Length: 351
Image (cartoon, rainbow, N blue to C red; front, side):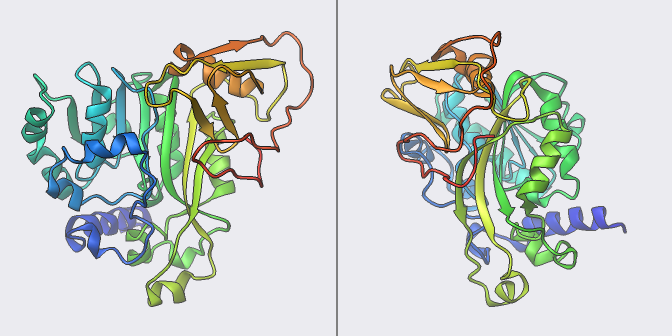
């Protein structure tokens, strides 16, 4: 058995047979904290207990303004995020959950009728498919076919992450969004730990060194991603601490869009106004840890940010003024703007 096959088999075994509920996890890596926005928390009350008990996520993967959109959840597991998003996209939207572990999919599918009735839908707006996130044709996803791809602490489990990112940008429509939470590191995980079945299952063995993530995104054709949040992971298990305690692990939420970006933030004189038209955010909205847009106030932005706001679903909520006819040099993206409710990353740039 080659290394790739062994990793996939170990992951399937860990999530299909070893873990019975999220209480069986040995670290805080695959266990979401209180990062879920307040406006989404009431939706959890509509989700079946069994679905919630088998949820293994590391953060909140719910971008805004999804009504009527087609959203794909990579590594959907028992379907908790899918059933929450089903309430967000509404009856005109669709949520497609993809997973390789049959035991998890059985739980998700078992409760489709329950949630359809609970949400007063005429027909289900969720569809659970068995497939491989490294090859989304296995789940019948066509080129340029979905609005948003999310993933909650799953890509670290893949032995072929480059293929995952390539597939994400293949299936996204132009202007579509990748929004994912996962485990990242400040250094590469030693090769000897990348196949440890416990570290793999706890989402640590396959954690991505952040600069390798940047390189993989570049190979997939995406030259700009944004950090939304970043939180350290605690290793409370003594054996895991002994093996991997020298590594700085982080739960990070990142986002990017299928746009033609430059590889640096460049200044073309763009200014953006947020209209306040997203119901959950009437007073202002955060794009990432460097960009908060108070309603009605002009905010200078770089050329890449202008595309994120004008060439995506956010174009309905922003007035972006300016074009690319005059270049004023690099954009000052070192100093973060004030934000509301999200800690700012003062160490990096927005690109």
